[in-house]
Each structure stands twice: as structure tokens, then as C-alpha cells.
Image (cartoon, rainbow, N blue to C red):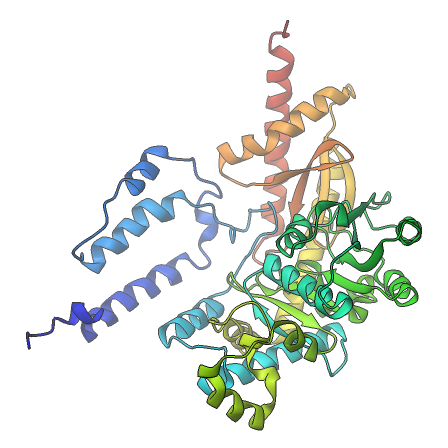
Length: 490
């Protein structure tokens, strides 16, 4: 037998592992807390992209130092920093160092969290973490759930449960309802599940961009009269566009009267359940049959860390449980010990499952709920400050006031030219990206482009906001001048 090279076993020597690990930890520590020193956005370097894409398949290995240097040179220099204190676009993910280290532990120990006998401690921690979320939002003790990658899979999983439990899998003539402000993951999830586009009925949102209950009730009656089968309402707790919260209690009442399933996409806004002063806006969320909730948004976890909660934990097994002869022994052992709910491969889509719950559990243990609550409250306060700064500048029209740490607005030229206001607002996000100091994104509301500031990063300072509002005012004024001076098109 030939001598075995450690590399053939996909191993590094102990000294190499320590050196590599210490180097990476040093990089992360140097980066953590220093994000503000980096530009928020990076120019797209297509030459670098081509250099990466043209790299041949490596037949032989390289020194880890060279590979890490390539990572720093070609990858780190081409990403936007979503955890930057002046990144206000989309829904930022600010992460935390403890969560990142928990991911390192979960990966380093290669923890398989799918079958109770193979990862008992991991299963227990995930069950505990789900129970903490259940307690925070007020769901009953028989509720359950699991951790998944993100809001897309959480909502898909919730809709799959609704299809199975409410329809017994029979989708013929079934109809689901949401507002025109619902995230596209709802329509995409339904398409994946086999529903036709016409089986989703979008209801025009009200003046506050919420799902109007009276209009929804009329739509349900119309569909029943036409021989269709209304079965589910997909409400939103914190829309991506404006942070609007659908009237959850009223929707729950309607769903009870009409025997409909209430699914709530709380991927962003459900975290406000932690806030003693803001939780009232989410009244009724505890009545959802299924609830999607992203911890990597407003609970400051590294991506990917989302969850789905269900009012009755047995619904997950009823939807996803399958049998396999090669798992008979392990299944029998775990069922005797804890029942089926700790075998998470039967609770959702994945069989092979990463231990995502570890970072959530470890972060809360290290920082405590009070610190997370204070960070969430800070997001509300920063959005209210942003709204005040925008109003005081006299350069902006507030479209939706600060809610759920989101404020939307558009440019307001002094001469009131609406076409010019649209043109400046359309171009402002690109101008910010090119500048690199701060970044905010746009969306469309009532057929008009508006800017959004999302202030859920607890490391954002009032100074960051003031400087960002000043920057936007200066860039908008420059755009206005350029547009006025541009030659008219024939």
C-alpha cells in the first residue's frame, strides 16, 4: 500500500489548521465594527469577474494562503456590505460575531440535524429555539416549527402545509388571497406547489398599503358564488415596500368565519414581537395557522436563518412525513424517546439539514433577549429620526411615515414639477451606488418610484443618518440640474 498523503484525505496538518483558523478569525475581528471604513457599494469590475470565470478546474491543490489571498482580492472587493451602518437598501442583514462563530462550530463539527438519534443535542436546541419564538409571538403550547434557509422556503413550507391540511392535497378550483403588497415569494411558492396563476387573487391594498378586509370578504363571496374553493389568506406582517402590517386580528376573524387558513409572512416584521411598545401593531399574529419569520433580518443573525411556526406541530409531519426502510431502526428509537417532532427531516422539505438553530440559540444566550429587544427598538427610533430629517430638509415628500423601521419618500423640486420629481427619484439610487458612502433602494408605490430607507441595523448612528440625508439632498440637486440642462428629446 502506498504512503497516504494527508491532502489525499482532504486534511491539513494541525499547525496549518491553527494558522489558517487564526488568520481568518483575525480577518473577521478586524472587519467587525470597522464596516463604516469601507465603501457601502462597489463598482462592478467585469475584468475581475472574467478572471474568476476563466479559472480552470484545479487538478492539484494550492497553498491555503494563496487561496485566501484570492478570496480577499477577487471576492471581498466585489461585494456590497449589507451589514454596513449606512446600507439602507432592501432589508439589510447586520449579523453578529457570535452567530458567525456558531456557524463555524456547526460546519466544523459537521452537525447533521435531521434525525434525533444522530444529532440529539442539535434537535433539542432547535426545538427549544422554536419554542422561544412561539412564546415571543404568543402561539399556543402545541405549536411547533423548524428552521429553514430564508423567507422563500419558510413561506413555501407554510403554503405546502396549508395545501395539505386545508385541502388534503386537492388543489382543484382552490383560491388563495393576498394584497398587491405581498412579497413575490408567495406567488412563486404557489407556482412551485402546482397552483395556476389564476388561483392567486391579489386584492388592491388600501391607502395605508394594507390588505382591506371588506374587499377581501367580497372577493371570497364572489369566488364561492362562482363555484371556486377559497382556502387561504396570505397576510403580511411588515411588507418589504413600506413595512405595512395587514390587519391580522380582523383577518383572523374572517378566516374563522369562512373556514380559511391564515398564513402570515412575518419574515421581516414578526421580530417586532420582541418590542413591548411596538408589539401591539402585530396583534393577531398569534392566531396564524402558519407564520414565516426570518431571524437573519431583524434578529441580527448571519444568513441563512429563518423559521416556520405552525399552530399544531403535528401538521408538519402530516405534510412531509415519508418512510424509508434504511431508517427504520433510528425512527423506532427516536419515536420511543421523543415522538416524531424531533426528527426534523420529516418536518419540512430537507432531509440533509444544517444546524441553523445553533447561531440563534448561542446569540440569545450570549447577548440576552433584552439586548436584542433594545436593538429592535433602535431600528424604530432611527426610522423616526430619518423621517424627521427628511421632513426638516424641505427637499422630500414623505410617502409612508416611519413604520417597522422603514420610511419611503420621493424628491420634491421647489417648482413642484412632478415629472422632474419622478426623474430625479428614479436616478438617485444609482447615484448613491456610484458614490459609495451610503446606499438606499427604490420601489414602486401607486405607479411612482419612491426611495426607501430601512434602519434596522443597530450599529447605524444618528450621524450616519444625518450624513446620508445630506448626501441624498446634494445628489438629488445635482441630478435636478443635469436633467434641466439636458437637451430635450425630439
